Amino acid sequence: MQSRVLAASYEMSDAEVSRAHGPRPRRRPQWGRLLLIAAALSFLGVFLALPLLAVFVQALAMGVGAYVAAIFDPMAWAAVKLTLRIAATAVPLNLVFGVAAAWAIAKFDFRGKSTLISLIDLPFAVSPVIAGLIFILIFGTHGWFGGTLRAHHIRVVFAVPGIVLATTFVTFPFIARELIPVMQAQGKDDEETALSLGASGWQTFWRVTLPNIRWGLLYGVLLCNARAMGEFGAVSVVSGHIRGLTNTMPLHVEILYNEYNYVGAFAVASLLALLALLTLAGKSLLEWRQPELRHSARQPPDRTRRERT
Amino acid sequence: MATPLTAVELKMHKPRRVLPGFQMTLGYTMTYLSLLVLIPLSAVFIRSLGLGWGHFWEIVTAPRVVASLRLSFGAALVAASINALFGLLVAWVLVRYTFPFRRLIDAIVDLPFALPTAVAGIALTALYAPNGWLGAALKPLGIKVAYTPLGIVVALTFIGLPFVVRTLQPVLEDLDKEVEQAAATLGASAVQAFVLVILPALWPAMLTGFALAFARAVGEYGSVIFIAGNMPMKSEIAPLLIVAKLEQYDYAGATAIAVVMLVLSFALMLGINALQSWTLSRHGGR
Image (cartoon, rainbow over all chains, first blue to last red; front, side, top):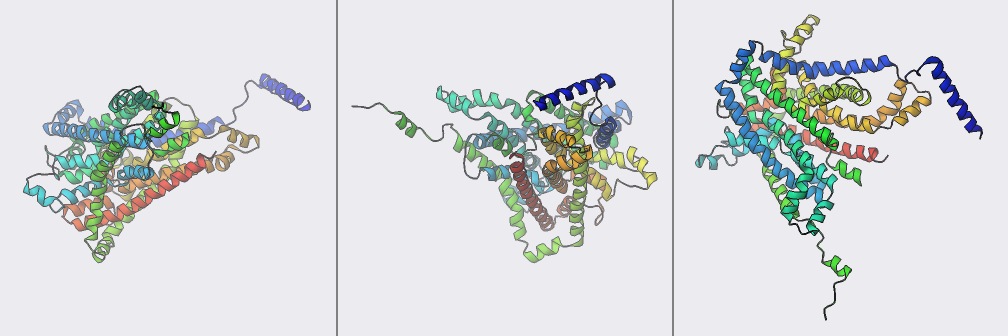
């Protein structure tokens, strides 16, 4: 009884205060908030916005004509085509693997599952240079299969197959680790229903599972593709830097830069920067459509599983 | 006389796994993983066994190798620390405050994941070179960034920037504002509430983000080599030394350095996994 009276009197005095002094002052001082926002934005400005801006400014330093000429240089075009070819091979390979791995891990329980998830993440812990080195140790002239390959005139290292292998290794975990949490969140009720209604395994996959995971799949493909087209270290080690033949876009940027052809280097770099911006835009769009995709990229895949139970 | 099947019998006959494709998908996963990742990676270790312990130790303890490993791990440590501090600031501002273009800025945080490392490398070099926008401004202060170890730290800070922000954001979003308000009601200042209430809840995620940024920075190559100057003993990172040895056909040397880096990176990854499950058990136990 007494407390109710106290509460009522408190409410009343509160109302009187706002009537007398206008709206109540905010809890946190406004200037502290502004200072923190300013500090964060300056940091991001110096470390993210300036480098991005520098790419385009340097590319256009000698005018639009020089920029266009640099982009339509035949060697630059050869690099663009090779990069597209590499990504068009590496991404589908990892896509099929990602779907298979996610199906096995998300829909079934088996021993050693968490070890398998850790092993899938392994390429993230390997330096890109070492990712290139391992394929030289296997397929190089002095490698395990070096002699056999030479006898059959097959080139892997310092040729396109080596670049594909190194790129596939580096981008290996991307799609699997996007799909595993998505499939775990979906559960397996939909598939079991489809099967009980007489659908075959493949029909269930194409008509039930795939539509359910399509946004997560696209998200993984987007990230995988960005890395596949932009990979430098691993590809640099296995490519042999043969111009027009094994020169991907990032490698071409390096060659032009080392020849002091800055406009050329930054022109090709600007194409890669545009690709990065498109990737970020697509990623934001997908996150806006499917908010649960956000943050999944860097979370351990078993996070969602444990949260659900 | 045939008796109708009872529910119990139906259950008994029902296979334990209802969904098909387990053996096929797991088999494919294991085969692909082994062929592309496990067997190639084991090649490094098997090749290094052929070196013999004495030779291996001799390569790994050569002054140039030790200097490059120290630089790679040291610069990664400094860069990850900068990322931990500023990552906390950025995550805090993005989660707690509203301001114009917040969504756009939030999306841009992932730029280092999406921008090819070679592009980042030449862009940072152009900025911090003595005649660059930032390099020219820093020159009167006597600070040289490009072609020094400081440049390596700048490149690694760029590369590791998203890790801390992205690990902290979900934790900050989940954090009960009521706890803070309770602290404020009890008379704590904003700073006290932050240090005594918020920070203890954040630091496991901060440590995870730090470790992820560190792990990425240790092996980084593309963004560093343009800005580093690449002077042996001074500004030569370990991945670059591997490349240098490969170019001289010194496969033994390259393999030995790779083994040291792989062992350290795998130990780090195990640490991160342990940290994450520990964080989850704390975080999930609320």
